[in-house]
Length: 440
Ligand code: NAD
Ligand code: UGA
Image (cartoon, rainbow, N blue to C red; front, side, top):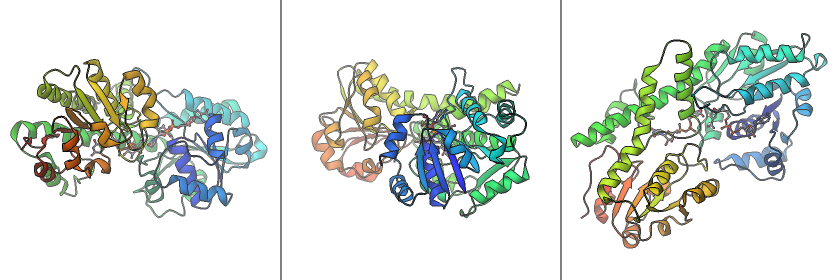
């Protein structure tokens, strides 16, 4: 099939590439000309495992193209996917101006002689947005254009987006038209995954409800972690114990500094806002947010307790990305910590395997020194903070670290180091919801 994807960011570029890998002909469009030039020249603007190889392969066989222009791609496409940003407004509501603009642009290109088109929203949007999209296209394209609207929310995680797209737990297709439903089922035919067919409103709501539920699981275990800290229990064992119950599952029960990224913070806010607007405040989610916001400030309180005064103390931070296996720093908890440490006058160095480039200008603003090598970053530090769950950090050479740091003190905000290894080298070790280990 011939597909256009509008918006070639994390979702659009990865989805478009995976559709090409499935055998479709795909044009990935973006209004950021620089991004399109980068892609056309064979470079990839983001770090996402497995993506680069798939892009090269599908470009080489002519199934994947990049274009700055929807006017030439839409006429040749059966399906048009929208994957543009839906960032939060200051009151938590969703900024739908990117979606509305793209929808108007699509409408202005559509002509009756182009035949039937399916317009699919992949961006995360509030329930009932599809209806607005339908009305807007009708208004700007005129009555004779044949089209249907579909909501097809995306559930990929950054850092494993290609695997999530090619092997999803489920595919949700929301449409009020059987014809459109069948077209989108054909798009996904090469993928072996259960398909849930719904109406448009339910599909839109599934996305906000799913992300909010995952965020709730994280805040739940983080609240349990605080109880563990007061009682000497170990949150890792508690998570294992409750996660062995299939009804609960161990997934997304990793205690730590809380959730960051471009999705959970904004989607929880959006769902709170949507419910409030409907007159049914979702106060449970307000608590999820409050717990998440308190995770890194509580962690910082513990560092302050230990060092007394942070001013002029050298603190090393391992990890800048909002999670492992990505260079994305949007809503990164690590950067929030760096900002607060700098405000108190600490001397901060920071490192990350993939995010130093994306973080560089923010680090400069904050006065944080970026260091490529993780051990050099920790040299002479009074405290090492682990802020992102990279496997490089989990497998760190602790003996080497002990030799170069000023104090043997680690604050592990992601619980990735093994207490047995810590004890063997004799570090003082603070983590989240696990027993404190004193320096040997
Ligand atoms: P992104 O910022 O990485 O990419 C969006 C792209 O859209 C950018 O390249 C931007 O230049 C382009 N764009 C904006 N306006 C445009 C226009 N008028 N015409 C053409 N291109 C335009 O965003 P993202 O992370 O890919 O997220 C996109 C949507 O998908 C959001 O609604 C997000 O909530 C949702 N989502 C994201 C993820 C994720 O892991 N990042 C996962 C699932 C769903
Ligand atoms: C999340 C969802 O997992 C995806 O299904 C969804 O498609 C996406 O949001 C979206 O809508 O954009 P993503 O934000 O890429 O994906 O990454 P996650 O793996 O979910 O991690 C999000 C944050 O939660 C990270 O900061 C991570 O460190 C934190 N986290 C995750 C925990 O603190 N504990 C956990 O157990 C899991």
